[in-house]
Image 1: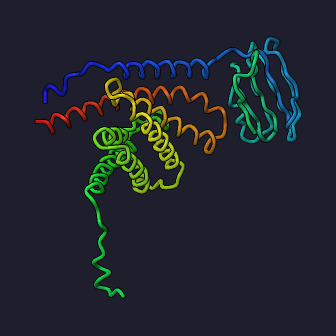
Image 2: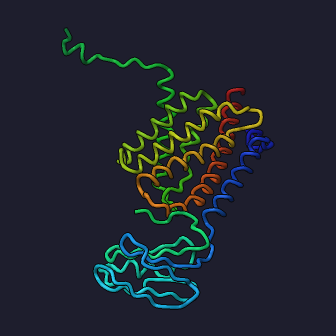
Length: 127
Length: 180
């Protein structure tokens, strides 16, 4: 019984598979977790692009949606819903968005924010 | 014409193989149930201990037996947990089918270079991929789950290695017992 507890020498193929597996997971992390800073924020109202602003300039944007005025804040490379007339306030609670590909939506007022970089990493909203 | 006496004595003919599959599946089911009550930091990240049984059966017997044990485990565990035909069951089934698919190909890898560790890693990746496809196309049709893929696949790698080492250990114990 004692001999079976001894570790046998790892096989060449096992080491190869393990190595390739590690590379695979590493590639997944680097491609799917690229927290590149965003450059622009795109605001959509309904099914149209309402406006696209650079994140470099601080400003407050007021967008009139179907149920009222939503205020969007852009501040030092970040953007957020500052206030919204919606009942549940999910969009406001989502807080600051600062990375490329991040998005926040306010369904009741049909407004969404999406942060854009140089290019879109992936389609982060589909509806 | 059948009378009631004859009806009572109906017997299903079972073979030695059937008994063996039933015993091994019972073992896999118990591991599956133990795992179901273990807390998990992230839903979906589980060690997949029942896959040790599948791998062990693949090496000790053949692919057909392993497929039987794996699929019986999925169905019976879902009945015991009350999740039959629920999303959890669909995830479990798709994972099992994908990993069996990989094992079907992987069983032809030369045994000289590839042990159960290789197959376990590959099967774990396939298991995760099958589950993530169901999640992406049915449960959460949103690309946001892409953020979770690296975590799931990393967990699959870790548990794949652990399960493979355990399978190797069990196989060596088993062969030592048979020899001695």
